[in-house]
Amino acid sequence: MYERAMGQNFSRLATVVQRFHRLAGLHVLHGQVEADAPRSLSGKLLALFLGTPRQAFSGAIRFELDASPTAETWTRYFPGRTMTSRLHICSGKVVEHLGAARLTFDLVESAGRLEMRLMRLRFLGIPCPNWLMPQLVAQETEHGDLLQFRVQAALPLVGVVASYRGHLTVPAQESP
View 1 (cartoon, rainbow, N blue to C red):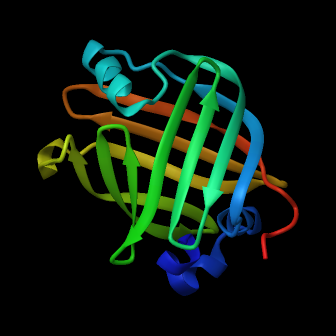
View 2: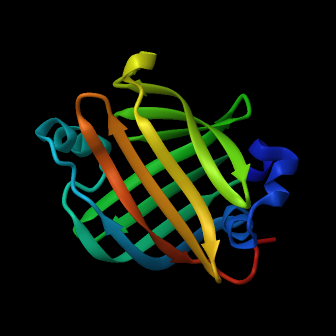
View 3: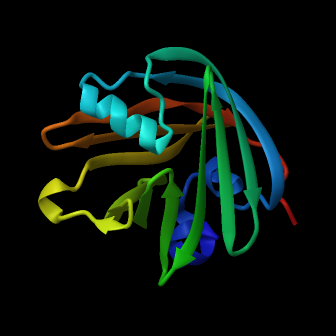
């Protein structure tokens, strides 16, 4: 799905990032993750609606990927918290359904790293105005044979809603 969305730019991504996004079917990946807690009450409430971590922690993560050519389901098992999102392509963009939010991303390759740039956001079906759009970092890169990820979302007047980073071990063989 990511390869279709990115076209030729996909081949410039780091090898582990390509391998991850070429997986098909059901896969269970393991790794480590660190998360920071939202600092404000409104940030914690939004984290509750989105299913993102609400407490700081460091520990193991189990990641379930169910990937077809047209859609993917990502289930992240953080210590004490499960977060599921569903992704599909729409007009060349990746759309992620995460709790009460629908996020539309442009996928960009930068020095082998994948950056997911937020283009649009709907929360509870309501379009988010530009002045309220979150500052979002969503990146994947490689470190040796590991897929490293970093996600951080902060809203004006609210602060950080989600912040976690870590790595996953990606199977050595690509799916056929």
